[in-house]
Amino acid sequence: MKNLYLFCIIPVFLSICIGAGPQDSVLTGFIDVPDGKLYYEMTGQGDESMVLIHDGLVHAVVWDAQVSAFKEKYRIVRYDRRGYGRSPKPEKPFSNIEDLNTVFTSLKIDKAILIGMSAGGGLAIDFTIHYPEKVSYLVVVGAIVGGFTYSDHFRTRGGRLTAEDFADRGKLLRYFVMEDPYETAPQNKAVKEKLWKIMEANPQNIDFEKNRLDQPPKRKAIDGLNQINIPVLIIDGEYDIPDVFAHAGAIDAGIANAKRVVVSNAGHLVPFEKPELFNKEVLNFLNNASFFQALNTKGVEAAAELFYRKHKADPDWIPFSEMEMNILGYQHLQDGKTREAIELFKLNVAAYPESSNTYDSLGEAYMNSGDKELAIQNYKKSLELNPGNDNAVEMLKLLQ
Picture 1 (cartoon, one colour):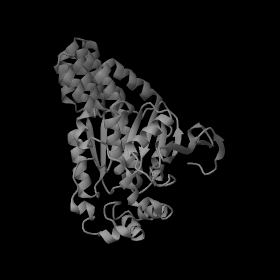
Picture 2 (cartoon, rainbow, N blue to C red):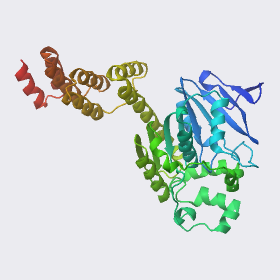
Picture 3 (tube, one colour):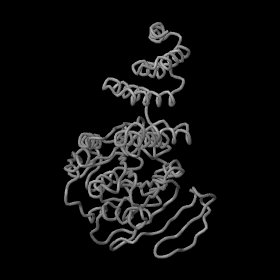
Picture 4 (cartoon, helix red, strand yellow):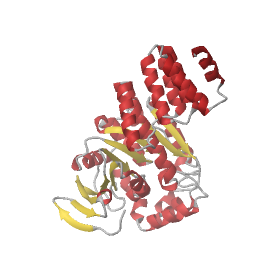
């Protein structure tokens, strides 16, 4: 975000910061919640909203790289949970779920993509179970899930922390930032230094006592995972603590429409350690999910319209792999849905025009439909791209 802002006050709890252009406009301020307030920032443009929920150590600044990457396509909201960053410490019992719901209602967000990290990922899951109509897609990073167990290894960080250590906030801060082998990958020294500067300026983040006032939901999330029917992406860093992988496995097993990714050379704070890779995984997931949601609910024609419209505006918008679409096309072909198969193979050709295989598959579909001329045309194109395609040679002998 830009450092030079023009501030002006508008009614109730909002202040607006204006930067160089529309995508740089940042709305900031505080949202009133029962017995407290939450600091938030909102920026970006686009028809879809995205809400980012930080972990249990670093406040909303942990998402800087994601805001920069996503703001041109999405309306992005991030906020500091109670006792983190600029949000005051809670003094009375509260609900993180209802706080998040207040963020939605106060900022007039009807539905959003929800991205949560660690404890923020657990909150995102809880919120999705309690308010399913408000979440379009869910991304959880190093997430925990309510109602699932923790080992002593998790509680003591593999025997590295004692109860006395938790009582010494300064020691605890240095441990989590500079010594813990799970929070960030051991070799990522520059990341640790960057994290230290953030945490040194926000020591209140390390006061875990505030979390005791958070009222747990009446129903454990582990028992409600099967109610989540939207596309879900689960991301973990390879150096994260073993319990997080156990929780990720439970989330993956409990949600039917979930995809899981493990990021190399990263620990718990994947978006902070490997922002470019993380951002790419998220965008690929969102593109893929929107396309296949249209395909599964509205049919091939609607999915094709979505693809051609988005791909024309952004040639990098390819929501499926070549193999993925090829398999899907042949499934339709085997089911006797030849017309739909042709449309799917045509999408593959449009997405991967330099692939001999996409034309070969389209040629076969046209041959099955009885369109000899278009079958020949596509087999010839396939052979042009790959002179060693023996199948195309044989098919052309049969057709010509």
